[in-house]
Length: 529
Image 1 (cartoon, rainbow, N blue to C red):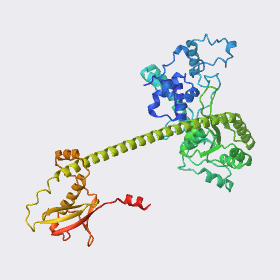
Image 2: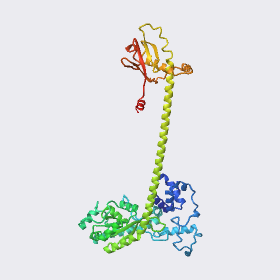
Image 3: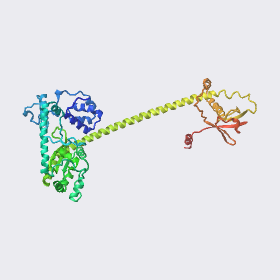
Image 4: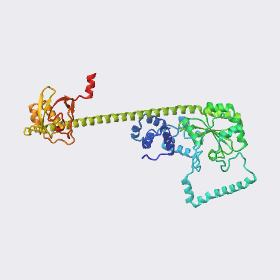
């Protein structure tokens, strides 16, 4: 697990995660990558997309004394203060001086750590439960509260201003009956369950709107502007006449409509009497409506990380002031938007290339795996065929060995108990053999098969055959490669183990058959060709 990281480092880690969308199991490697590169986001991103994360993460972390200026968010930029002329020397600045400047940043949140430039107010997405502060980046320290509650004096000092606040609130409540609040102010609570801004605007102008208002929640518009590097124009109105007059004059103006269209500005509009818009208005510190804010994803300094910030509050008193301010602010930040858009496109392109490379690598692994599986399957199939061939050859020899003495001792059979069958071999030779009436047609085929096999054996092979045991495997079924045919009329003798020779008229009390070898269909097709 990585060591504790500071809030500024966590912010860079979040930015890194948003750009790369790295996996959870890469968390430790990413932290090591950022730490080994002095939390320089651009350098770390470049090495990540180059595929060097494993090598970089394995490196030893750099020593603290060697921290380069400008690498950490708490480091002070000497060039901003004038370099040597301000009395700072890069080679002489100590870690205590770094800590002192970090302390200054902590005490002055409106000052940037990169050149003491004023920071823009940061905008966050709205919280779903509406209980937290979703707008400007405000936080309350729970440790401070614990200090007050554990000290009676501090607790009393804490109660006094709260009591005064309650009294003032009560007075304000009483005066609200005498002096009602202006309709331009924010309501105390939402009164509308849902508000269709586009329908409301088109009812005011009695025409179709030329401005493309964003249809969806503020968070959707927020994320779209952030991800696509576009300006977000946030418009907040109320149930007052000022809001209606503002809408009719501003968003029905061709100059403003064309500017929004040309610059591809996302326009989100809401009524503060609706819960979401009211929460947004409070977190943007809105006091009266209508109010318009230009929001964009920009950096407060040259080395700062970009974040969604309020670029400007656009005046709503007149059309000229509105369009002049809006155009000036867009032109002011447009170069940065273009640069950031190019950088984002490059990062997306690099990410896509990496994804394609990973996909191609995975596909190659799958292809190699399939090839390996195919080779293994072919190897197993070959081994199976070899085993089947060995099994068949072994049992075939046992089959022939079992027939050597089967047809020799039939001379003692009386007349009427046997038949004589004359066989014409393919070589033209004739063979006469006596068979018992109890012999089957399978026995007749077996005799012929034995005769044909013995003609192919040498004397040594015959002696070896006699030594083979005749324990034939029960799964072995001998296949004959020929047929026995009675010529006149043509009759093919079937291979049956349950039919005796005495039951076949062509073989009983005597018969004459020819031997014809079987020809495979493949062989027939080759002959036809």
